Length: 117
Image (cartoon, rainbow, N blue to C red):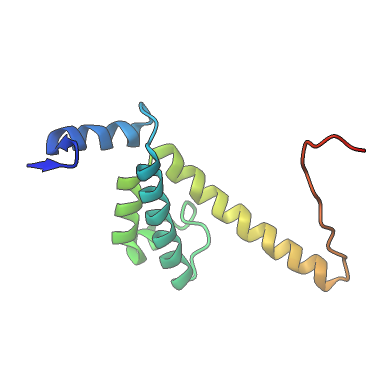
């Protein structure tokens, strides 16, 4: 059976190499990973789970199918990175909300490398 330009065994081999981090994912493989990540994170949100690493058993029970897809479609290092990033992003947003409630003024910061006039 042929899937695109790869046979089934070639596709499986390629997927395993991407998961292991031995080859860089293509644009379509990255998009597939991001879609799986977003579905997994939506499931975690629905089940009020913030830290999937700390609450691994609860996350595995609540989001088993989404977790399997996420881990199948993304490099293992990316899975860990995204899980840690999610926790830090939630904490950052909560801290910004606290600061705004305390009267902090939001500053728009533009970071570019244009020459200053």
